Length: 144
Image 1: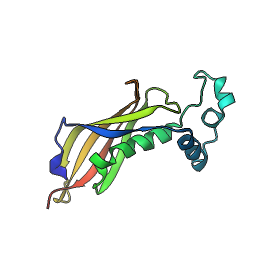
Image 2: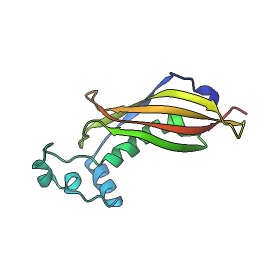
Image 3: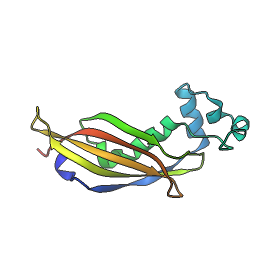
Image 4: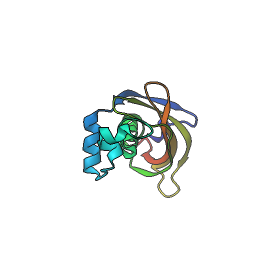
């Protein structure tokens, strides 16, 4: 509920998610992203990272998913995402963790039974390297 969020609040999401080769391959195929950097081990060995790079939109999707239980699982809607930054590469076998900070909250101007909460989510890997960050606004109900 809207009342459960407070400006400056930090929410640590658990558990994390280890990225498997199957995750990356399936997502690449489903989304038609057939860039060899994401699906061809031999090609990837010739690149700057020397190994398969996990698809960025998969990373984004997983990190959003890690936050659902605590942030948007009972939301009316996600109103928008902004300032998405891929900060470091993610590889098969990496484990992602997420932490969210409440930036602002305000009551809805048009409907008194809800409010808008703006949050920033940061994802790190198992080595505490920042891999992704983004902001979003969610529309949440007030307590009845």
